[in-house]
Image (cartoon, rainbow, N blue to C red; front, side, top):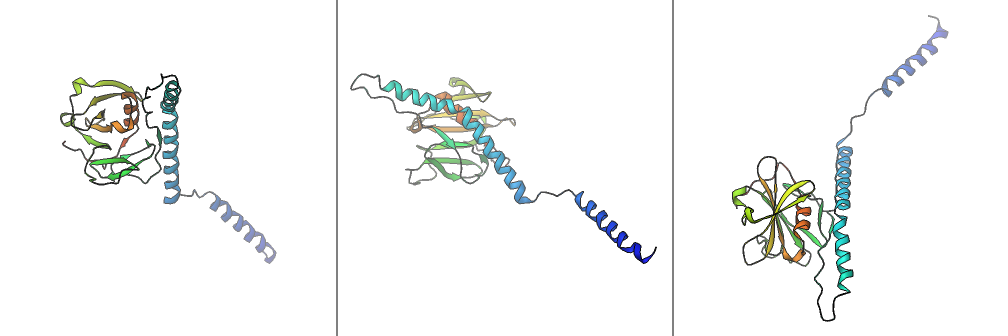
Length: 215
């Protein structure tokens, strides 16, 4: 090799290293993976809201029908609509939507409680007037499943029944693959039909951190 050939060899080596670097596949960092996860959750929430859009249409129709009521007749209050959940992740469960004006009050592996924004948070262990979400077994479901109304929501069989006690509410149970049940207690304050209560319940996800309660 002559002295004049050296620059050409150096250029060839540089080109070779450049091509080798271009073939390296970048491994996504934690931040990129977190962004992908957030985007996936947001897309799922948008799909859920689209599927539940009919609930809002029914509410609007109800307002229109109230205009035709005789004078002195009080129209029934409209159901509280669902909106995308934009809060922090909760323990044991996944929320896609929540009733408009409602927030997470407490979040534990054993139960998740939602309350309206005018709820001062007193007696956090009380479920009265609040939405309570938990994982339980069939024998601990409040009420009698045999008397429940069977509703189809999100392609799943859901049982809706009246819960016992002084505070009237709907109990909604959704069977899980492992034999347990997702139980959602819906207070009268949201004014949901059995179908609306079931539609909400099937949007709630159960994570491995959820603990089965015993009543």
